[in-house]
Structures are given as structure tokens and as C-alpha cells.
Amino acid sequence: MQCRLRTPFISILIAVFGLSVVHAEKLTLNARSRKPTQEGSPRFHTTNLPLSWKAEQTAIVVCDMWDKHWCPTSTERVGQMVPRMNEVITAARDRGVLIIHCPSDTLDFYKDTPQRKRAMAAVKVETKIPLKGWCHLDRSVEGDALPIDDSDGGCDCEESFTKNFRAWSRQHPGIEIADQDAITDSAEAFYLMKQRGVSNVIVMGVHLNMCVLGRPFSIRQMVQQGQNVVLMRDMTDTMYNPKMSPFVNHFTGTDLVVEHIEKYWCSSVLSTDIIGGEEFRFPADKRKHLVVLCAEREYRTHESLPKFAQEHLGDDFRVSYVWDDVNDTNNLPGIDVVADADLLLVSVRRRTLPPAQLKFVRDHVAAGKPLAGIRTASHAFCLRGKEPSEGLENWTEFDQQVFGGNYTNHHGDGPNTVVSEAPKSRESVIQLALDASKIVGHGSLYKVSPLANSATPLLFGTIPGADVEPIAWENRRADGGLSFYTSLGHIEDFGHPEFQKMLTQVLVQMTK
Image (cartoon, rainbow, N blue to C red; front, side, top):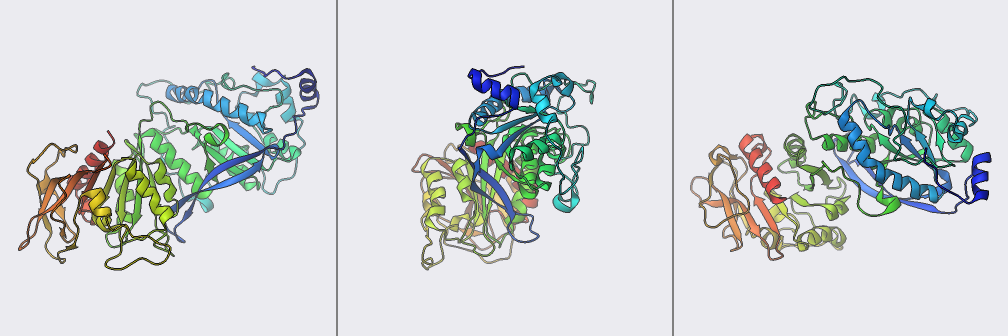
């Protein structure tokens, strides 16, 4: 077992009495949480709010970071996470945070250590709710199931091998266990917290859909006992096999469970809150970050886009959503996530935002980052022929500046739009491999001609008695970035496989 060197006097105090240095430090954590856009809604606003916790009232629980798992890919991912996790633990310990190592089923390895004896010596306390050996899914809180199906054990290895045996013997040796830490895998963790006056808990480790939720020292039970709990979301992993529902990338599966926890149990933070730098990403996680702004009701993209994204984008993207406030449609809570976007997808209709919110979109564009828009995005951030209310901002040039478009109005509802591929006028970045004739436009045809010289049409649309109009094009912006726009996007459009294929191809190509 690795131990950090201390001055002789402090080492004696720690070894004999289990004392640690008193710190007056505070931890500032950016806690990401989710709340329903309105009661009963399946959509959630995502916001970040700062937490200020006293270090000496805070514990880090390290959940089941074993030396080996029966699933080889799980073992590999744990090993990849260990260096960063150890760095976080070391920094937190040095600031006065109590570190509780919880490598379940391996306590015999630690039975004679002072860290194990420290946990065993914690006086049992009465609890509001009995602490269980395992806390299963609470349907009254989180619904009938987790968002991923892990009934096959969750291993995502291709090869066949013996599964579900106890492969672990200790915590991963790359995670340092210092003199003043504790080791347990039971309710002793909570008893020790109460003994030390610890009311704040940061949980990290594996596996998120199993032990991190269910163990007696972990999320469900600590929340039920009234502790202030956060998950460190970049220091965890799931047992999830993409061959199981919802049939998404392994890392997207992990994101779905993180979201589930943020909705129903506790907020989450990043390792960057403790040690700075960039958040941890597994080497195999190559997904780009797609942020969707959705603030329109006419074409029901609040229904179609999440379904489309889950079915078609999970392999290539981490997807974040920003919804409008039901009580103030010119407010987009959580829009600050755009600052981290690799690609922005806009489905917004005539919203005038506070300048501080609209600045996130302006900054994304100014940085030359790609942006895609569907349907009403051509008139996303401006009112028709009038000024916005005080404190709000029109961006009337958004269509011209970002999409190279010229939206003036639309034809009346009636015939469906017949779609055809645009003749090649010049080389385009976006190459569509599909049968355009199979796409049908169900919304009214938009009047957008003429496009800017910087725009390259990809698809045309026609209706009887009207001029042909571009309905999909790319635009090479003045800032050097690439935009894509399509006036398609009616909820019935999303029911066509060729439209789904087109939008998938576009978004993937825009981030290559």
C-alpha cells in the first residue's frame, strides 16, 4: 500500500489518533443539476450553480475502483481513469477533505491497516432510514427503470469469456491510500462521516448504474440520509453494452445515467473543480459535443429532435439540450453550455434573448465553429417588423450572416414540397449520399431566394405554381466557419428515413 510522507509529528498524530490537519479551506464546485421545464415534462433545464463547501466537512467516496474486473474493457477503462482520479484525491486530501476508499469485497486485503481500523472504530449512529447492504431502484423517485438496459451484465467486449466472477482482490494500486484515509465497504462510511462532522459527499468510481448508485456508502443511501451529495461525472463509468437498449455508444450510455442521477438524485461536478485543466475523457471516447437550442412550438422539434438524436447521433456526439423557459420564452436557461459546443444545432423561432445569453451564440459563430439550423432557425432571434422588449436583443442579420439565407416569408400550407438534389455548381464540404426524391417536405415552402454568394445549394424544393427554392444549403461564413441550413424540419419530415439520413450525414461531416 502506498503512503505519503509527512512530518514526524503529524504522522504520529495521524497514525495513533486518526487526526488530520485542520484546514479552513473551502471547495468551490460548479454543480450541474436538472429540473423539469414544467411539472410532468420529459424535458429538463440544465444549469450550473456554484457550491461552496468547507473542506473539513467534505468526504470523497471512492467506489469500487478495483484492481481487476471480470470484464476486460471495464478493467482497461478503470486503469485509464486512475491517474487523474489519484491526482484529484491527492489535491482534495491536501485541502482537508476526508478520503474514504470503498473497494467492496476486498477488505481482507486491508484488515490489519490503520485505515481499515479507523473505519471499523466509527461509532454506529441511528439513521433516519435504515442503511441497507444495497439500495435498489426507487421507482417512487426515479421511475420504472434506468435509461440503459444492463440486464446482460453490461460488458461491451467482443470476445467470449467467463463472466460474473470475483476478479478483484484490492483497490487499484495506482490510487494512493494515505495515512489519514479510511477503508470500508459498508455503513461504516456514514458512521465515520457523522463522527467527523462531514455533511458533504463527493462520489466517484464505478460502476455508475450499479455500485455508485446502490452501495451503502454511495449516492442513493447518502442522499436518503440527508447528506449533501454530488457525483464527479468525469470520474466514473458504466457497465453498459451498446448491443442493449437504447443501442447507443458506451459513453453515451454513461451520459444517460449521469443525466438520470442529475434529474432524480443529485448534482454532478467535474474533476476540473478540484485540479483545473480539462475534464477527463476516455481515450476511446471520440464523440464531439453537439448542443441543441430548441425554442419553438410550431413544428414540435422539442419532440422530434430528442428522438432523432438518441436513435442516430449517439455514436458520434455528446448531446446537450437547451430549452426555453415555459414562463418566459425569451429565456434559455443553461445556454452557457454553448461555450463548450463543437457544433451548435438551432431550432428556435422568433426569440429575442438577453444580450448575455445571445452572446454565447455570437461567440460560437465568431470563433469559426460550425452551426446548423433547421426550419425556423432562419428567423431564430428576431421579431417580425418590431423591436424587442427592454433588455432583450434582436439579431435581424442572423439569417444572412450565419446561413447566407434570405428568408422573407413562406408559401401557404397545402401541397407537400417535392425535393430534388441541387446541380453541382461548385465543390461543397457537405456531401449527401442519399436519394433526395424520397424526401418529402410537409411544412410550407419557405421563400429564401436569392442566397448569398457564399452559400452552396444542396437540395431544391418545388410546389405547384411557385418558383423553385433552395431548401438545404451550406454556407462558408465570413468568420471562416461552416453553416448548414434546411427549411425542412416539420415533425412529419423526421419520420422519413432519407431526411434522418441527410441530417445525420450533415452533422457528422460538419465536425470532421
